[in-house]
Image (cartoon, rainbow, N blue to C red; front, side, top):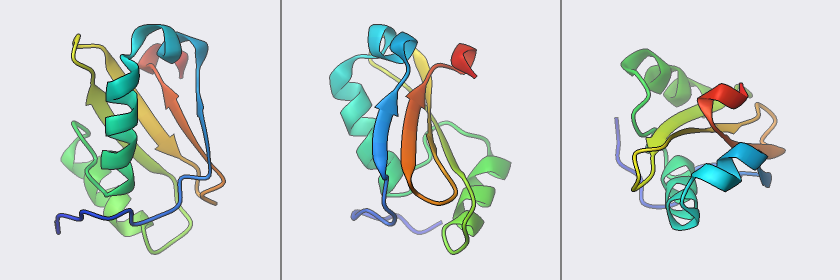
Length: 93
């Protein structure tokens, strides 16, 4: 996988669930949004990372997994049409 330093896709409208806002450190949320947009999929599995790479050239959902500085696990999902990106906790799904 090629490391990217610039955003590879549009995030659309950025939203977060109330639980994510309450639990995830805001600076880590911003940092990981940038990582997600640069195709650093965080801690997602190899299969999900491969699916994301294939989805870049198609209209498919993009999914990343991160932990903030306090160890709170959260997901970032960009919709297939790139209209919105959601930050959420696994329990929100």
